[in-house]
Amino acid sequence: DTGVSQNPRHKITKRGQNVTFRCDPISEHNRLYWYRQTLGQGPEFLTYFQNEAQLEKSRLLSDRFSAERPKGSFSTLEIQRTEQGDSAMYLCASSFGLATDTQYFGPGTRLTVL
Amino acid sequence: EDKVVQSPLSLVVHEGDTVTLNCSYEVTNFRSLLWYKQEKKAPTFLFMLTSSGIEKKSGRLSSILDKKELSSILNITATQTGDSAIYLCAVDSDQAGTALIFGKGTTLSVSS
Image (cartoon, rainbow over all chains, first blue to last red; front, top):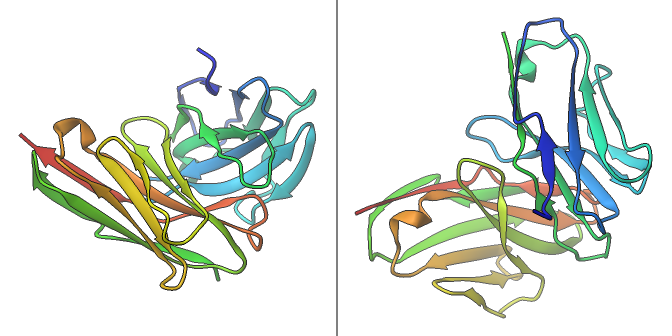
């Protein structure tokens, strides 16, 4: 399968714990995006990388959230001191990086904070 | 503030019906509009529209953009139960950087 992959697919954690998610983009894509989606809402942009550089961060990305893409390939999204409001589907997408290219989404990681 | 509004929010039809989903937008420096289909997993790409009045088709699905009216429609003809999903509209604008601005989606249910 050469699509975008994400791990884990599901994560249940207790409030206050730290969690880390991983995204592996399509191999030739140099842009990688993180989104968050809650029930009944469309995905909301969190952050974006061009190769290993994090170029944009949304207002939604509080200080407890950090994302990395150390070698310009896979990316990790860490949430520290999780809160119940962090419960959501976390989606990763990748694209070639052209001006009008298409973002292809991974299956997402469903986070539940108890 | 940039926004994307989809209507209706939900729709129930019978197999074989034709449906039209609407998307309107207010964004600064529009670049493109995209339609995605989301079932129980991540969104899958359907269409990208950049030019007004040019219809894009894929099987029973088609879509067209009207830049004058700041809107797009997604048509599905001869619906099947497998078309049941959430259909998301997203807009790419210079103002949003490289992020997509999504609407809340239209939930389509097709009954047999």
